[in-house]
Image: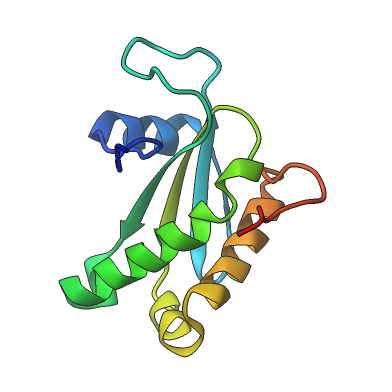
Length: 131
């Protein structure tokens, strides 16, 4: 299975989401989202694609990569319940480091669901798929 499937990786994709997308935020995360109306030749898959951004202000590379891993895991639990062909960029704000240390993935997942609901990106009543 290809690990990069469903992820934003090219700089142009991030730039398009930042420039033409919308944004919502809470204390821990900033969410930019852009609905892809047409799939281009370089975008063969449908469904949400996500990119994560963690600033160097949040600590060493070990700290930043841990935050990204926790964010990816929290997002993975809700990816199936997102609507449409969305490109999503999640940016970690400085207080998220403390949240990861104190509450781990579950705490980050709660804050991520909060910001996804704020943007009206979660479909229906069932927000978490069964394990």
